[in-house]
Image (cartoon, rainbow, N blue to C red):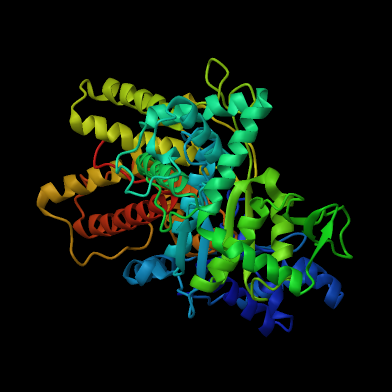
Length: 588
């Protein structure tokens, strides 16, 4: 189904063409003066230079050609040469009726869907999730859902840090505390215990303790590095301990991500590609891509057009140890072999821009990906407190993610209890649903690359550009539809009718922009465009609602048209919040 703005543009382009001018001058945009018109075309201004003619004369000729238009109720030439446009109510109504009957409301599906891998999450195991993990989870999940809605085959991968020095540190500290564990007996040949020798809370305490010791005690750090080497070399007891660490950590990660309504298709980590690294290193050496520099194995990735220094991509350190670079390149190889993706999207802190530039260039130079494979890094900004500094606890430490979630849940529960005067189980679940909208919308409504202030008071407000305001609007629509249902049922064959008021037409025009918005959100990997759209849509609906007596309307034909309109508003709002990663309750 064609985008609404494209249909309008076609009409003006035809008018330019029949007037003797280049049809491409007829591109239409939303009006920057909505008090004067709904859409505008500035093509006559550009045409003046091409045709050496006053722009107002060109605009007037085009306007005259639109006198019998089925699309426009008004085409006005305005000095010095603008075309101010208003669309016919019948044209808008017809478009929305077609949308309502179409698959995915008329969003065009790709003829050949792309295979896309979204790499987001990136937690290190054995550590609790903190607020720094919030943005990659929220942004990555929304990017994945938007791409799926746009008709593509999308795989989400958590890509855990599960193979580095932190494992050696944990094993070393366990050895210090419980040296008699069977895992440290090199002569043991039986089966290891099924239950781990530690709890989750103990594991979360062990790592920071071991990390602190290694910074103060060189001998302790040497032991940890030796333990890491033994683990990576395949020592049975160390591998068994690693499996326990993974099982305990992943169970906790799944619980926390589940609270965020974030799902991964793949739960892979650095460990999954360790066996590929030797072969990859041999290939890079054999094909002449990698060489030794100051003891390290590197690949040059600088290009002649570079305006800044791009350091070589290090493959192995001078001691032969691998790095994140190594595992990320091996992961790219693994993904290409197993999934053949057309695109790989990485969602991380924007401070890693240079790192991913090196990785992507290395992958292309060494032909680890096909020429047409797209590699994209979405770098996000910092989540800051009201003081403008990275978000911390009141004590100044890094806040655990579940603590932040609980704080917002509590605030939302307090507000809902104030409104209802009670707090039953349904209200508690509603509070969690609305709290999640507050967190996700608060983040996603900002362009990903920008820093933003995490303001709990603002994000949990039921007024303004917030998640709770969007949900309140959806619940209001559901309430109206329920009341109409109680009066005798919703009309089965009702169709959206021509607008009878300014606010109704504004709402309809906002609905008509859904396809273009969703297409742009996918193509530009931009969840904030969905947020901006639904905020404008919610505002347009609430203006219409306050001016219109829907439930008490006696003209049943008019009422049926309004109900059809409301159902479309509800459906599009719910689709949009779903791709943002949250849902709406039945009542608030």
